[in-house]
Length: 298
Image (cartoon, rainbow, N blue to C red; front, side, top):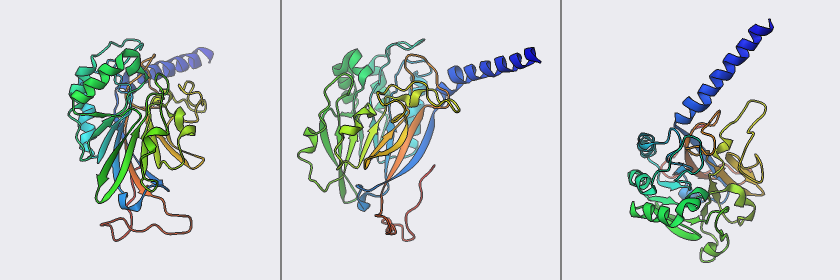
């Protein structure tokens, strides 16, 4: 019996390797999530964000065709705003090759949303050439924020985006960009690494991050063996609520170091934001929806 079981285990390991190195990294899923946030105003209920991070153009399976597919998928779900959370280039991945940021930006110029496309830079961008990556994106019509705020309006309401400098390679200023934002106005913070969350002021409605890739590998029972965060798996992926702060970490598109994904497919995160009613109070109907709020996707 032992040789038979060894053969079965070897076959399962081979299948897992094929899936992790050749199939899942080449997938692209759109995952819809509805976030109910206590500091998000009801007038802005239903705002849809297309969130993309860690493209790592030039990593295995991240070529021109994949980028065109990414743009088509994002445009196809019609977000109100697209945010790009850094790491457009790739350095140090097995089987990868450097792709000029201008080439990547030329494809990303095809992204469209009523409120525009806004980006921040990540550690790989700065390890390569941050100013060049920024020029490439801005030349493609993509707004880049670094320790800066941007006011946006939608259907009579307004909110702010605050883009922070990369935590690993720069000096993020969490306080400065918020000084001139009125206290009652909602804020979304864009950061590459989620490790900044404990320093985010409580007045911020939502922090969006990438960087972790969701660990790239999520194993049954064992979880995520490697997460590039000093907090381990605490901020690895998805919606995190901690001390009244709300964080969403997207698992991103590409790979770094080892070109593997297992249980963490490349993802475009489509977020629908809604106001969270106080405990004990029924939520009011969203504008244009007399029967109450519709539910988002899974």
